[in-house]
Length: 281
Image 1: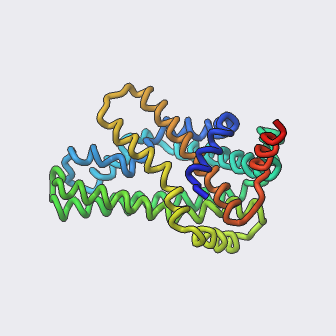
Image 2: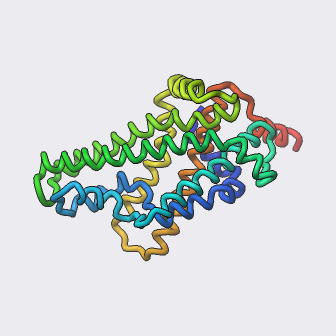
């Protein structure tokens, strides 16, 4: 199965209900955080003199407007609610073939509360660790290859390659963690069972699954890189960021469920219903 194609196809088919569920976290993230700043900082880095670790830190997080405690809390809560509703919606759609939107939302949260909360906390810790490692490696490369001041051409090339490599490694490590959500929802696994089963899923088609998971982030990173050559009003930048985050969140949740159902050999009634309706016409 081509997971990228199937995920994009599913997003197109269910765009409006998914967008209604996931627009809140997309808006919150779009307002406070620049998409893919851990890769798209390279063009700014290429023309910036670096003299300390904090200079690289500011480059990576320059577009982030997080200056107080409440934005990260809002981001976490909005992502939590969006993922709870999103996974619940898709799981029911796959199992019943019906698009059940906001019917008994409390039940939807109850079904996904602990799986999503556990995974979101783990991913948050991994994201902090990833960011610190990335900034440290880029700064170390700068000191070795360029010293103080502007980075050399070799420095820029090496830093770009390393940044992308570290990001792919981060996705490869966090991917199995996210698969714990549908495993705990569908099978009721305990943490240890869900964790081991998630890595087992990744192991069956590792390259294909990892590449499909990296795809939306690399696409957004390329768009972000292209946008650095244009001067845009702040509100336009925010709107673009919201659209990018909406796409990423919709893709990741849909992709995880599609892969889990495919690798586990579970029946998807949303596909059967479509085929049945076509035959009846």
